[in-house]
Image (cartoon, rainbow, N blue to C red; front, side):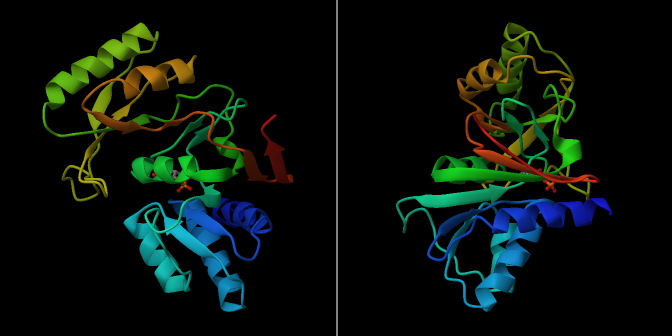
Length: 232
Ligand SMILES: O=C[C@H](O)[C@H](O)[C@H](O)COP(=O)(O)O
């Protein structure tokens, strides 16, 4: 089974948790895209749900698949968010934002009663940090913000190169919110909650890709089958 089939399997398992009438957060990325497609099939077969997309890309996918959409201004909570991740550790800390959607993803996950993370099992790691940590920043004052981030890294005992993310065309990648992303190559993040707190305190940082205390369960698809792990 190839990686894409594993991602679809994880998405299909998460779909089993969806009930009629649910208000859903719809994640972003290649794994979440499978979930939106499978959800669309169920909607076309009569399932009644409404979704809040975490990116313009997901909004377009959901519209294409016939999933009805709303916003967090029009509903007061979400029952369940299903989203992918770039890394997941045993404490259910996540790195997200490889696709640049971390800000809306975090807003949606935080507004949700439950978050199911769907992934192939290569995303499950002992320690976060091999995947570069995305930090979404305001372009204004970037030099000062960068120095503040470096100081936060040093205070938290991590270090590594940071680079402004580029799009495929070589131009700076701009998020759905009009911001830029610094990708920090840290290698190991020993204390993700501490680093998350330090980054959140920096004025030019809009959001960062450390998701702490948001995931309720993880669905991992691998060669040996599906594993569902619940947060204790
Ligand atoms: O911004 C992107 C999201 O955080 C994705 O959920 C994450 O990058 C995982 O994406 P994929 O399922 O494509 O590996």
